[in-house]
Amino acid sequence: MSTLICSFDGLHDNRVLCYCADFEAHTLHMDTQTESGEKISVHFTGLLAHWFENVIQDNILFGMDEITVDGFFQQYKDLLDGTISYGFPACCSIEELRKRMEREHIRVFVIDSSLGLCGFVLAQEVELQCP
Image (cartoon, rainbow, N blue to C red; front, side, top):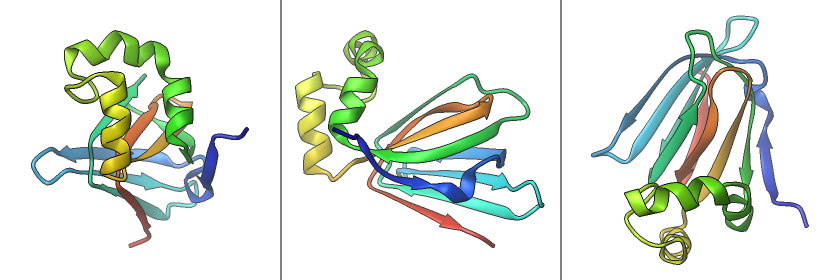
């Protein structure tokens, strides 16, 4: 059974210019730029948590996919087993986290890299904007 819900193809090979999480507003904003110079902003709202690794100066995205909550718990089982007791991504057990994500309609967005930054964002909504 596939865990993929949808792919955000407009981010392939985009360079990450910056990202910023606002924990009070529960948002995460990421500015990217295509190879042709077009800027695309990614706005996550209803942010529960995010986890990025391999962040370097010149991050190039491979893409972003929305996956199922079940897929998230399968794919990130080892990470969650090691971090949940420290309050990440939320102060609760794995089962309580699953229930909270369902109750609050939290979606899972996985960011894959060609170079550098990769990880996931747990949020209620995402919007891509071309200024």
